[in-house]
Length: 200
Image (cartoon, rainbow, N blue to C red; front, top):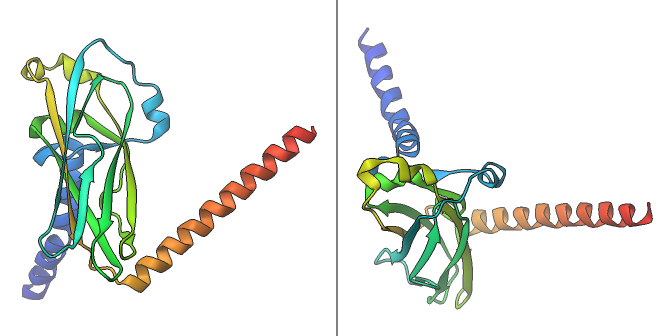
């Protein structure tokens, strides 16, 4: 009985992090934004209400990177898709793998802030002295306009913080090379389809 209890507590502890992350993603708790695919985003209507989006960038003290948004603020319509870029530069003399976390403020806006593409929670490999552009594609759900508590809100801040990843340089490089190989295959297939269509 005691062994079963210990195993059960261990299982709950192991599951607590992914369960908490899932809870935050569903509810927007803690300023967690929502992740949607491009196809779902295409069906979102644009309404005539402007919202300002501010961009913040931070790095952990041990990470020798320069990290900042290309623009500090944009104004968009609710439902309008927008793409902006963050830029990171490795200031050290060795390759570094970083990983970014994020949140939005006010936290209550998290459930309405939808990211179609971003660089969060993935390993980012940068060579010494290399500069990397990292796009973020997002929109603010127009349903936010229906919430009484959000009527007076006109500014949302999206904040990223980069930390050094626990992934080794070798593993990150192997993953990057695999991703590039897959991208090359997809492009080759698309080119072959286009060529075939032109012949037809």
